[in-house]
Image (cartoon, rainbow, N blue to C red; front, side, top):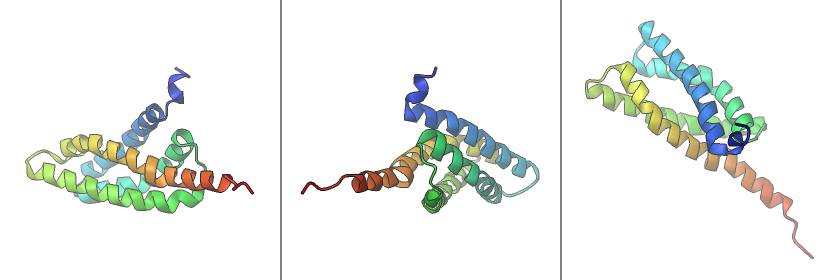
Length: 137
């Protein structure tokens, strides 16, 4: 098991399951409380954002730099809009907001991995690598 956890994507999936379960539980709770799906999704997103930044950053991408939070928030703002748009399309197709939210998890998860790997945490890694390379005289 320990050797499997060396693979970044597997760690992303496992930590993502934790984060997604937490976020979806909040979403379902807010729906149950009578909130509209977009507001329920927004509240779940905001509450789980810091938790997700910390877990994805430290456990998956091995970054502990809080300065990346702004990039994480910007990326997730776009992912949030994609998520709500997809749920809205599914609801218009006469699916329940619960099922629509669950079905949206797969494409949102894939988009999230790519954006975090290459835009949020990967871009920082590339700049750090570039700074560590010193030109030879």
